[in-house]
Image (cartoon, rainbow, N blue to C red; front, side):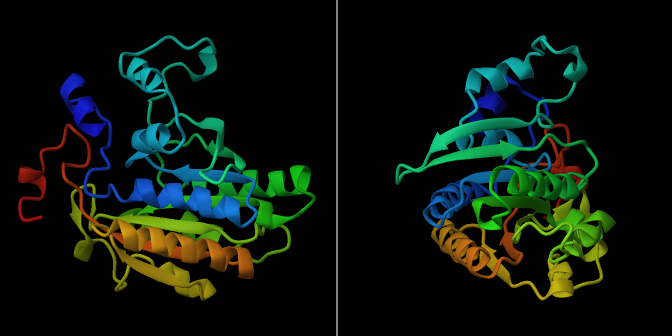
Length: 262
């Protein structure tokens, strides 16, 4: 998918997931294993990195729809006309490999990193209260972060602090960090003072699983463990996916100039 986009839409921004490809089988396992443990609906919030790939290969958004967005299709609803393809939301219903029917939502997001986090929690809480008789085990919020953003954006701290509050709790959130060790062009050593980008998890004593991004099987195992932990204890859990970024920040960034050593 990524190489096709690179061939057909040269130089256009797509925020490739190459270097963190194991995220795709990992998310697949979240959906399948979550459904086995009673999850009926998933609400996903993520920024631009790998979003088009997730939409296509996890959510099943038609490829021709994504390609038409590259070519600037006209929207019937003028209120969203002009928004970029890696900001658009999507909702679908899919069957898991075990035959469970699950609803999947990816929230639309702005360019402001992590701003979608509390929105996803709010959507999840509303669904829990309205559609699932206040049973938090039926809806799973998933937040996909970047390593630089989760370590630096204040809204992450604010969102995490709502984890067990009666007015806001959602039965635990699965946090996945695409830790490609660089934020835009900033080396991680110049971006934070903490040892790990996931040290925010210590605030709520949430477990953190550090996973090698080149080991897809290990990530799938970690995802299973995370689902079972969340469903059992109804608390947040973090997965730190240690990976890399094959290209620049976007396809207009030449990393041999901006990050030659990396």
